[in-house]
Image 1: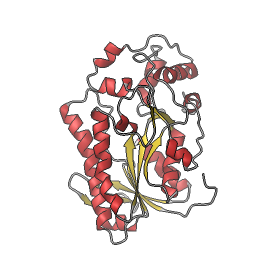
Image 2 (image 1 turned 135 degrees about the horizontal axis):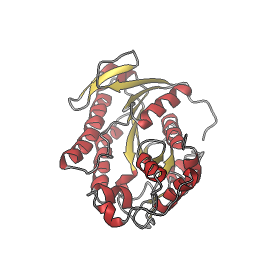
Image 3 (image 1 turned 45 degrees about the vertical axis):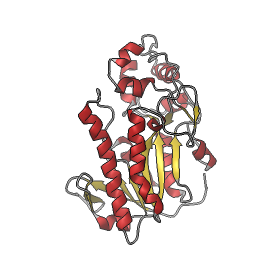
Image 4 (image 1 turned 120 degrees about the vertical axis):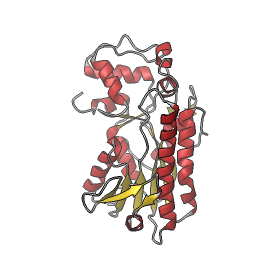
Length: 304
């Protein structure tokens, strides 16, 4: 990572109330950048700006003013089972947000130089033991379809003066978010392998996730997809074992494959898909991970 002090940026964030958005906002401010956020209610101070992605409306002036836009907006995937209505919401919330921001950037007389578009490793689908990089093609399944269409909604901006970066995030090792059910299961003493436990779970520490997003904003020569995953791949069994070990709980019961399938489509896609992913482009760009292994990442969860 470059040791030179980056030029302060004015960053506009959509989705700043989420787990990643809140931490990213604070990290950017700490790093000397100015942060504005998009909200769907009446703004409460000068850093908030009204938008409605479903109606396609946004404060054009703040888009013109921003140096960079970060789009983290999208409905949660954690609501299980995935009903047809919720699957539609998951897709449309992502498409509408990306399209509204994209149209505002395209219409700007002074467009931001960067659009950092959230994405996910779900784009690769279930790939077994294959080693995956940013050059790997999309896979199959609902998550792969949603993520492919999510990135496609932002792709038209690539032909403008604004560079587009796609942050394909894996399992963020944090106190909340996708890790919360695993932490609860472990705390109750019923942790164990999920399915066979041999499937690869691409993970990244909470701290490195935020650091990588800031890095991608500040390194203005970078564009295209980047895998935001830790440098040392881990299986599902290794993740759950590390959590149990650090929480000083047993690792014995687990969740058999048949039980995962009772969750409907969501269970197998989220828990049983195998994705052995490396952060090839991040490493090539000089990003240095603070947490190299799953044990190091889990050890950083506060009040574990």
